[in-house]
Amino acid sequence: MYGNHFYNESTRRYVAVFGTMFNDIQIGRSNNAGTEVQRMTVPINYAPMQKILAKLEQDPNLDAPAMTLPRMSFEITGMAYNAERKLTSMTRQVKGSAGSDGSVTSLFTPAPYDIEFQLNIMTKYNEDGMKILEQILPYFKPDCTVSVKMIDELNTYVDVPIVLTSVSQEDTYEADFQTRRALVWTLNFTMKAYYFGPVSTKKQIKFVDVDLYPSFAISDSGTEIEVTPGVPVSVASLTTGTAYRIYDLGSASSTTNQAAWNTYLGAVGQSYKVGDAFTATSGTAPTGATATLPFTAIDIDDDWKHLVIKSDGDGLI
Image (cartoon, rainbow, N blue to C red; front, side, top):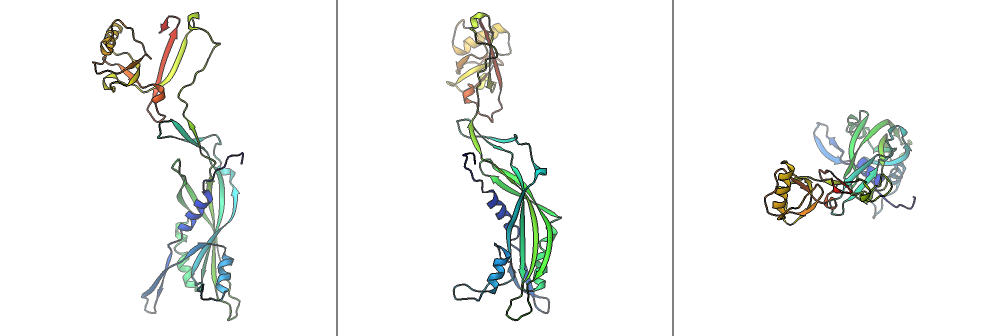
């Protein structure tokens, strides 16, 4: 749609989660003395109830053994948009990339949909149905919430309530000796699901050049203000040979700071200002001075602040 192909496997994940909730139900069989002599796991598959019942009526052959009871099946019976759970459309989930390109992966809020599931319990004996039913009902009061991983790229998990809405029973026996009896319990559920749109990956905006006034030359008594990201660290801890920009000249007086910077950089009579680029040395750092990496080397997840540089016709101020 809109020329943007994507597939988050949302419905597939919801079906898998729903089926997993009931795929380890067991029942036991006891003898007259009350001793358990057999325990079996009730099989479950995604299929309409009518297909299972039709399979029961088929004669077994050499290639396909007869289907036995008890067993369970489930299927999706419908979907509907739920406006009551709608979130703000423009809210986005954002995650910075671990790479060096500074890219950002984002995702808009999902659309809320109610998915209707039907779970069918088919047994030959009424007692088997009761045993299965009693292993399900206590967990739905009337809902049970599960956490589903929806978007792998963002490691996004969503808490999804599953509400048990009704329970009914049906006996398919038609009073003849050729028909196999099947007691069917039908449980209807509503899953309060969310459907996400496409995941977009864009490069991080690190620098914006904005003219607040008509263009002018600095020599025309105008003032230019440059604001860039900055991560201030002590000059004493810088890596020798790496390029930085001055964030704070130091905690001493202006004259002392200037002298300390000249000594640190091996210069004489130079005047240094906030924003000046320099290469770190192994010399003695000015007291209290801080520096930052160039904005192009700062990642979105860094604890960055703002470096403000002003300049007028006389140079930096």
